[in-house]
Length: 265
Image (cartoon, rainbow, N blue to C red; front, side, top):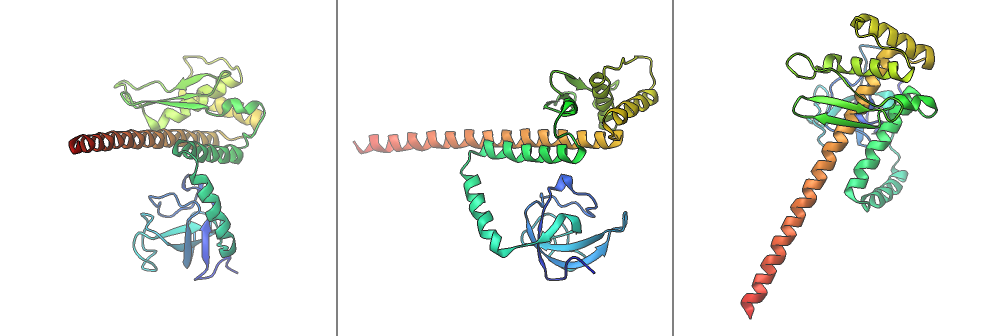
């Protein structure tokens, strides 16, 4: 029996980067957005049930094969959906109003801190010594497109070595960063003449032996964590630009008001 029926009003319970089995990625984060079930389908990769959802706003999606307005549709796995409770929506609106009273920068920081907490919980880094494998800060060098990940005092700052043309290769960067972090965390000597295959196998062994976590899962986790830091920095920079623009507008407005007062004398 299907979990939802056509016409059911649903709400998305996960952020876009946390969701798997998303057939066509929407441009907008779907978390907390409300939509209506307009069809069902079985995911091709794992056989789980997914639903065509027509959202109440344009999310940069698609038309669910003609089931909704173009741009408003998205196929979402059932585990990221729950029935929308109209009665509780008023409480959420009140909470949103309280949240919006906070400074924009604080809202942005809290949003991304929550996202990182979710990622930490999913991989199992919720406390203890393995917090040393959790990125604390991320630095981006736009000149070389290099990302430096700071893991804190125990592991320190790690970056992948640039290739010959001094460009960062994202296809191997996170493998390198993950391996270096694991070697430092578990005090394993890194030999410069080791092949990339030997390095990866050893890192995989060290991580799984000490944490029970697969290396591929940790690399994916690192990518997602770094993405949250970069997105946060981008939003904070935009917020700062908005603040500067507003200050400039206020100065111009005050200057014009001053000029008008002087002209009346």
